[in-house]
Image (cartoon, rainbow over all chains, first blue to last red; front, side):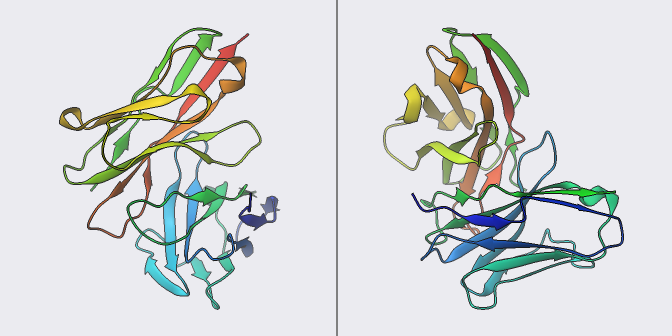
Length: 115
Length: 114
C-alpha cells in the first residue's frame, strides 16, 4: 500500500534555531494536513492544504511557523525560531480529497526535540 | 467549538478480557466518525469508520463500534482482546458543513497483558 513519506524521522535542535520538516503525500491525494501531537494528547491540526492552497491555518502560530505546498504535491513545514514548547511529534496526513467520507493516511511523523 | 472526548486515558487488560473505549463528541449536526489506531513504532492507521446506515460498524481485527446519536457517542468494542491489540486508540470526527477537518480525541493507551 502506498505510504505518506516524512523526513527527517527525528530532529534535535536548540531553541531559537530554524527547523524544517518535509512530507510527500500519497500520489493523487489532493488534501494534505499537518498535525502536531504532544505526548499524551491527540493530533491537533496546524494547517490543511487543498492542492497548493491553504484551506485552514487558523491554529498555525504564524509568528514562527510557516507551511507551503508550492506545486500541490509535497509540503514543507518550517519553524523559526524553535521554542522549547515546540517539542512534539509532527504528523503529515493526506486524503484523496476533502470531504465527509475521506479517511486519512498518516506518515510516521517527525519527532522534534528542542533543547 | 467541536470537541472529541475520550474519557479512558489508560486501560490495562488481560488477554481475553472484553474492551470498551468511550468516545463522545460535542457537535449536534451531521458527523462522520472514525477510530484510528497506532501500534508501537507504527504510524496512525484507520481501524473503522461510520458514515451512515447501520450504527453498528465492524472494523479490522475484530473491532466494532456503535454510533448512538442520542448520546453523541461512538464507543469502540472488542469481545476478547489480544496482546497484539496493545496500542494507542484515537477517536476522530468530521463535521459536515465546515472545512471537513478531522478532529481527534486525546487518545486511549491500551496495554494488554499476556
